[in-house]
Amino acid sequence: MDGESLLMNRKVGFWDKIVRNNMPNSNFILQDNLDNLRILIDNSNISAFASNLTINERIVPNRIAIEIKDKISKVDFYLIYHKNIDKKLLSLFDGNN
Image (tube, rainbow, N blue to C red; front, side, top):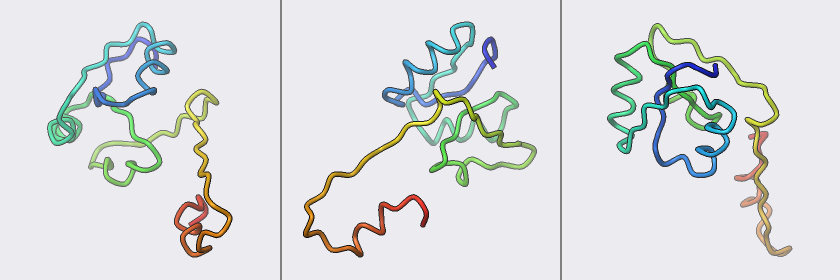
């Protein structure tokens, strides 16, 4: 993918550095407005990123989603909570739901 042009949200936080370091020859077309980004994704043939959380929002006709399986593209998040928290609340954070 390095060397390709890609549509990308300007506000991706730590992902910006990861993507730029690993794709130094790519041209990132940055968008501040998510609605405008969606319009561009829907109406162009330029590749774009999606996460496991946004993949269902980003599927459009004539597009194929390809999972990036490189270990650099996976980030683990942890929740630290008080031991007396209601166990029902914990189920909201279980990645298997």
